Amino acid sequence: MPDRVSSQTALLSDAEAESLRLQLLEVIPRLRRHHLLDLADTLHEAARERRMGEPRHFDARI
Image 1 (tube, rainbow, N blue to C red):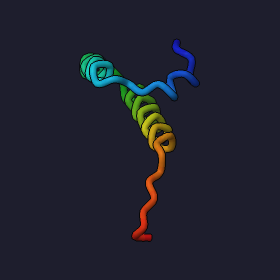
Image 2: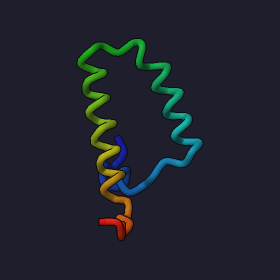
Image 3: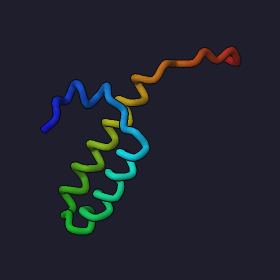
């Protein structure tokens, strides 16, 4: 399994994201409910970490 820290800092290229999407489409029909819930939690956490790592833009409207 890849190192968790390095996977957080490395963003997927478009080709890698498309490859992962296709793999998930292949696997998801075979998963059970608890697997889907674990997957959803993992994806939600990854999206949150990615958003937190993005630079914040100053909004003068505030």
